Every structure is written in C-alpha cells, then in structure tokens.
Image (cartoon, rainbow, N blue to C red; front, side, top):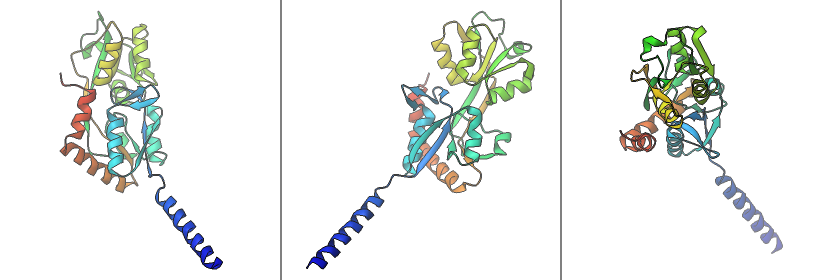
Length: 245
C-alpha cells in the first residue's frame, strides 16, 4: 500500500511540474526605440507610451508574445536589431536605402512629414532661407541625413534628442530645427515663441525594422499590420494621438 501511495505522489509531482511548465512566460517581442519622439514614443511618468508603443503592443498580442520596450539612442536601434539584441526597431523610423543594407522593413504603417521649426520673427521664411544657417537635428535621423546633404555638414548641429535641439533653438544657439511634423507640433505647443514653417521639408514612410535573417517575424508583423489596418485598429491608435484637424 505504501508503494502505491509513493507512486501516486510521484505522479502528482510530475503532473504538477508539467503544469508549471505550461504556464511559463510568453516569448518576448523586444522593441528598440528612442522614447523622445512624441506622439510616436515618449514617457508618461515611467512608462513609454505613444503610437508606436500601442501598435507594437497589439502586434505582440496577435503574435502571442509579450512586448518589452528598450529605450536607447536612436543611432543604436539598427545595430540592436541587426545583432539580435532586440526583435525589432520602431521609432518613427523612415525606410531609406542605407538602412535597407542593414535590416529589412515591414510594410509602411504611417507617413511622416519633416518640417522646420524657427523662432517667431526669424528671418527664415522658406527652405531657401536655411542656407548658411545653423540647423539643429536629432543625430542619425533622416532629418540629419537630408539636412547634411542639402546644407552641408558645417551648418548642422546634432543632438541626442529632438527636445535638445529645440532647447538649443529657444536659447539662440541655432537658427532652426528640422524634425518630424508631429513631434514638432508638440514641441511648439510646449515652448512659447516657436513656429513651424508652412513649407514641408520632406515626406517619408515609417516602418518597422527587422533583422534580415528573421524573415518569419517580418511576415508575422506584416500580417498583423494588415489585420490592424483592415479592422480600423491602426487608424484608431493614430487618431488617439493625432486628432483630425
């Protein structure tokens, strides 16, 4: 009888361990970002929120994974994805030929517009007026790349964050800032005396960066994005942060 009880206890322990194994944590979907690009990603207290954060969370849910967001310098995102440190890069990131040499990109999920911020009363009224001026950009962004090509490296001041460039503008250290329109609107709203030029500087497509050897994840992300577009979820997330004017 004791032997039977012992066998039963062993079986119960095995079943218990199996049950514990079945309740293990979900696989992580790690998103590399730079959380100083409102409304796409920014801090709300200690939490990273925004369009990209919410879209990534819904994608992770569809894939049965747990979203983990890693905040880092914008210039480190491609390398983090390329080396496998992070599953994907999502930071209002523009698809460019140079970046495509290092990573693959998902289908486009948003369209960005680069604009120019200046001080009220500035003598800069058009893009032509930027020639010879000190222009602030967030380093390694397309604003940095385009402005360097158009106006020359000697006239570009690079900052780790877009907000640092805007601060430099308010302090008179630079003459203008080139950055995405949506963050620009946030920065202008929170800093008196700044305006956005009416002329668009550049239009670009935002997508999700994935390592070249992770084609399965890329397919899964594209499938999720297609579903989020079809059922209106993507539009609802964007509208939450960018209300229709």
